[in-house]
Image 1 (cartoon, rainbow, N blue to C red):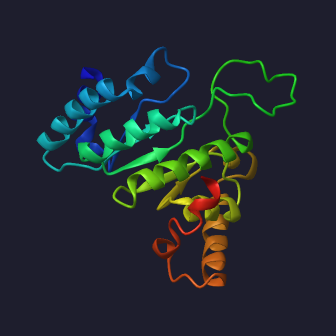
Image 2 (tube, helix red, strand yellow):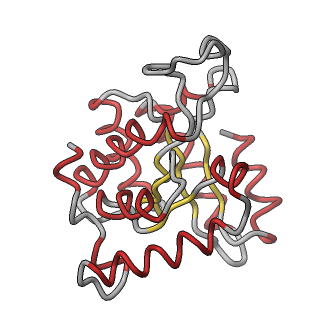
Length: 204
């Protein structure tokens, strides 16, 4: 917890927002910080440091997709009480379910297309648990406007993607933005905010 707070104290004046990442599968015991007691203590220290900044910045929490319903409920409860700006759902997964590649036994976090369904279901659960009281950022397997739109309909106010840009380049961001505009217009939404959570139930 002291490490997180120390980094925020040093970097806070130079960044627009900070993310408390307790979900990387590549750092030993990091995911243990997602439990209620550990997470509460961690966020209390981080938010205390944030409050001491000359210009307090938004702080987000990034969680794993490999969580049970009970674990998600605890995280949502702690997040709502902590003063966070939002939750980023999700990081990479340890699961290899459905993979056919000979490389599927390799260690580390799995990102990209195989993560889409798993991360979207976690997003839907979080959307239900937080009931619009906390902004959510949808991450995991997005490579098109249609997939970004699904995340929004499930409950995300914003989306992030990375793996797809490895294959399609940074121009993918503009392509997805234009595609989202068209999808929102098609369905009669004036903006992203109007569409958030409208398709959540089918992912629960």
